[in-house]
Each structure stands twice: as structure tokens, then as C-alpha cells.
Image (cartoon, rainbow, N blue to C red; front, side, top):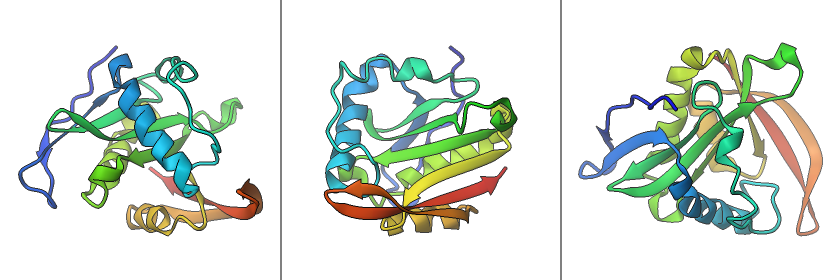
Length: 180
């Protein structure tokens, strides 16, 4: 596994906190799952309806390649504050250069620039990962995520109306895209 070479930087919003992005390792899974399960309960950031278990996600990291489709965590003072994955958009070869991006932030670390930092790093490193386009699939009612993606150069590439049902409420899915 190749190490991620990202220098720790100080957050602009919290100057005393060290932010470090690195490849996720198996020992990070409990924190990753805790963050994900918190998002499941909000019905804003994922179509997953039930919390996941460590056993169900034991192979999650193995589905990612640090050189092509990484799974990164952002640490602050040794604590996992958020994570990001890049994964193949669709399985056909013609989509090889397109990656789907997902980013989640621990509730205790929101509004500190964690998602922005992770997304910014993925954009900056896209060419070395052989990615020429990034796609985010975001519920239309997730206005903070839509705003963040837009601020980082993503545009609305599509809308899938009423494709998800969350607690008997039909939800739209916005496709945000960005060439890199």
C-alpha cells in the first residue's frame, strides 16, 4: 500500500487543530462506521436505511485501491473527523476515468472545513489517480452538501426525481459533476 503524501495543515476555522489526511486502515473501521451510521439516521446523506455493522463492512476497505480509488480518513489530533471514498462510477470500461465521490463528517467535527478539505484533496489528486471526472450523488434536500460541491466547482449534471423512498417520503437525487 502506497502512503498518502499529504502534509498536516492547520484548519482555517480551528487554528489549534492538526488535520491529517491518510489512507484508511482496518483499525479505523469502528470510527468510520460510527460516522456513517450517524448519517443513516438523519436521512439526508445516504440511501442506507438501517445502520451497518462492523461485520457487514469488514471488507469495505478492500474494495478500494489507494492508487486508483482511495478510501481516506481525516484525523484531527488522532481522532477520525471524517472520511472520503472515490469509487468506480459505473462498471463499463468507458467510465474508467469517472469516479463517484462520497464524503462523511463526524457530527462533533461539522462546520470546521473537514468535507471541504477532503473534497479539495480528491480534486487536487484526481489526475494522479487517473480520474478525469468526479460525480457526487446527493439528495436534493441535502442543501449543505449541494452548496459545498458547487463551491468546489461541481455543477448540476442531472436530476433523478423521486428515486428514493426514505421513511415513506419520496426524495430526488441530484447528480453533481466536475471535470478535473
